[in-house]
Length: 259
Image 1 (tube, rainbow, N blue to C red):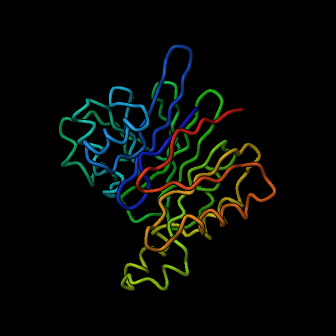
Image 2: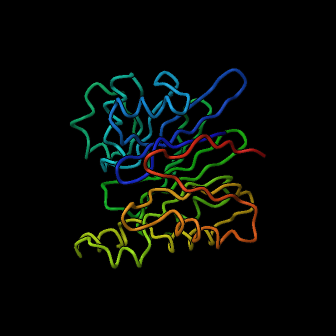
């Protein structure tokens, strides 16, 4: 299994997960918050094109995650998977798109990848995040949530790789120029994860197989790559897992999970 990001942050998110089995290859795009032209440009940077994508899986209806997904799917005749709550929020944009519903705990299979959605606390209609498996490896993704839950930590335990939201530093958010209502929303139970909360989640997981952790969805105003890296690294200081920080402009290049 390998995975890469087209970009990660409030201006747009898209994650590619790919696996090869024999002569067949499967690549899924998890979220697509960029317009068609920008998505195609970012795919090309990773050596991919629309014809290489097997389907698009959407986590929730916020524009930085779904903004380009349905348009891109319609243009390139790709199937889309989303929760029923997310569908209700974006149904006016679903004409001409082959879509399928997903729900918490029910695996869906796209080619040689198995994706299992799990519910998260976030201010959307029916938000889910995903754990993705192929024949050998398990990738856990958590990019939009306001707090830890037992269901969330159970879902992410035992992964070989993790993509975890490190949205903000609590001190930077508290002292930011954001209005109080926005600070409250971001730092609230249905907002976004701070570096500190994500570190606590990471510390609570079964990390016996863990090889790499990606800090993702960083706020450009209320966080820094250095602070996010430090928070994750403190948990892993006695372990061999690598820490990588995703960025808005370039995401991150292909990372191959190896045994």
